[in-house]
Image (cartoon, rainbow, N blue to C red; front, side):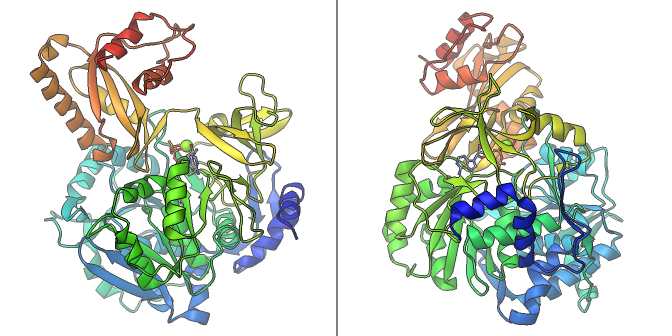
Length: 629
Ligand code: ATP
Ligand code: MG
């Protein structure tokens, strides 16, 4: 069947299409209904069916390929490298699951995972899945403040963490930040399970903190059976950076997610059992959930977890991994490729990369130069794919597992089966025609694997993402896009205010809130400014309560440093603004809304656009003045 026919079927007869795809996973009990869309926009997939993510990722493969590699944990930070077979992975996950049960964690309880890229992090995620606990992984680069708000929202019974991560050979302590976050949060976890890597000293809190290695030994022979879960039971919560300051907990199901991943592993990522997959992301992000941990394992592939920089010990490290483990499919981000582009070509050329079939890139727009360079250097197709934390798997791509269609430079591709993508004109609410810019939307029901709701807040889910247009429920991606005559989409940027620094997504609101906590800050605007290397960097414009505190160049510099320090401390260094400028007035609309996009335009040397709504045009000159223009 051609791609066009399959896609058409998936949209016109979603039940028949997904009933077919559901055969890619194991069900302990068959579902009675493929799709329940009786309460739109809420969607239930495979109603009544019972399955388990850990069973499909691990146990299922133990029978047929138990001795084959499942998890390959490599750290160039600590110089460790360990291959776990499916059988060994099952044993480790069982031990971790037994520890969790012993610590009082049961089905539906939340477990927050704040960990570096080590094997134990994957064990913890899979152990939660095994016993029906809901994990919430928080990116290790987030500091106390961000962590605290996530603890407060998810209310975990247990937190799994470690003494430290490591970056560029330097230990990054996690435990003090975690202690501070717990102190800040109104909710307190019952227990904290700590992996001691002996990278940084740790103070254990009596009665609360427990040592992973000790408990592992106690549960060394544990065999924890899988808890079969109704397909729509929640599997995990993953927080977005959140444009409103308060992060949204994206909640996902069990059965739909397993089916969507199995389906995408076949149709987009073309993964086969026994092969090796390498995604360079982090478990703190959605790519880490879908395509480091669950997706490859569900497809019976070995997956690589890599802790370390892409450039250390040298820029050949990724390619040496590809050679050594005969990686067939690799997943990364344009930012990372731009970093590698600056390195001498020998780094790549000296390795045998003949196992590699394709490189997948996602997370931000892929520019033509980067795409052409890496494609040429690797000699494999570069497959751009566009999606979101919310959708859990690609919306737009070229599904080469179905049909080998050409890609177009600058376009992530065409809608993947299951996603009914539409473009709407923001002001008229009408569907856009060919080559007409609009907001990228998805008509409900969303396919399996997408978010079920905002954790604990159905109302926020509906009001944030959904609208009714032409009588149909449509989900907004908050991205601008355009579709050409051949049906290829081009993503033109965001309609909200999230910035992307070196692949890390940060809400400008969150950074603003952090800066505002400095005693001398009265008002602040943070915008993302284009940066050749990092994609974007944060730049802050601050109005001081006491401007006299910054009346000399030295005083300004000192204050800038202080404010950066506040952000480092609360959110982590990834969120640190590249510059903090001090001004007397911020450009706002008459209704008091910050004209962020205009500030951004000035920073990037572009025209600030239609200024008819501005309250005081003089405020724009303030921005220009601060930038020395
Ligand atoms: P938040 O979590 O606050 O919503 P975020 O939207 O940056 O932040 P993600 O869900 O990880 O977090 O990122 C999804 C967004 O990244 C998309 O909405 C889009 O703006 C951008 N994006 C992802 N993939 C691509 C791509 N292939 N091409 C262009 N943009 C992309
Ligand atoms: Mg988003």
